[in-house]
Image 1 (cartoon, helix red, strand yellow):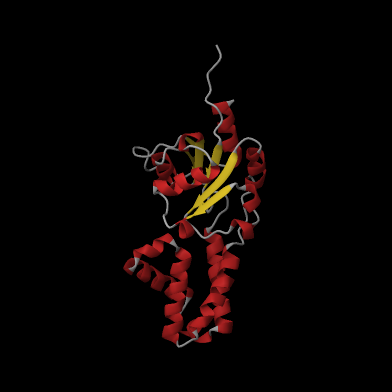
Image 2 (spheres, helix red, strand yellow; image 1 turned 120 degrees about the vertical axis):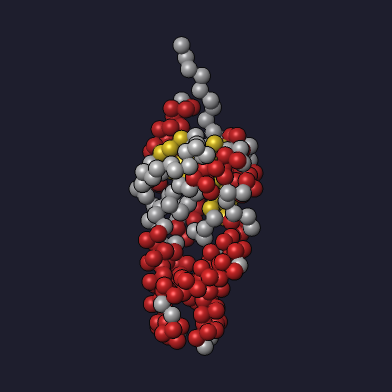
Length: 237
């Protein structure tokens, strides 16, 4: 007897940080590069602050102004402005500091399976990205592989709100039920996408336990884009 399989999705949408590349070591390196820049170009800030005290000041600012959660780049910029002013440095240098930081923040190295996986998927589906972060796909060199990209800082709404997923579907010209979303965060990515009407695949590269299994059930769990492609083929032939 022939098993009935559902048709292939028309689009696959991806989270970026920690789904297509590891981000924590990149941010740590970017903060080191930024602080070296401060030592050279804003020494009074470097004398009065450390990487850790700048981070703590950002967290305190975020607690006072939670709207910064929508754009952590803007939070970092505001934190630097406050630090420059407190140290008596020229705050007009902050934009130069941010340029230095963003260049390092976008020096990500995709996982080995990412580029081959994207190239294989492009033959079958439209590709999109939905992120809450500040990754610049153009700078990273992956923009040409995506038909649409939506980022919370420019869109004005962050995951897990359904509207950010729906906006990417709209740009791709597909209905939510015709799309699959892939991300590493159970709440932001899996639950958010499912509540927007998409199927959601949990990209669990490091083998985390699903501590929310009673509440959140991904449509699939994979450890790589190879695993994603295998699942798509099993489900859709």
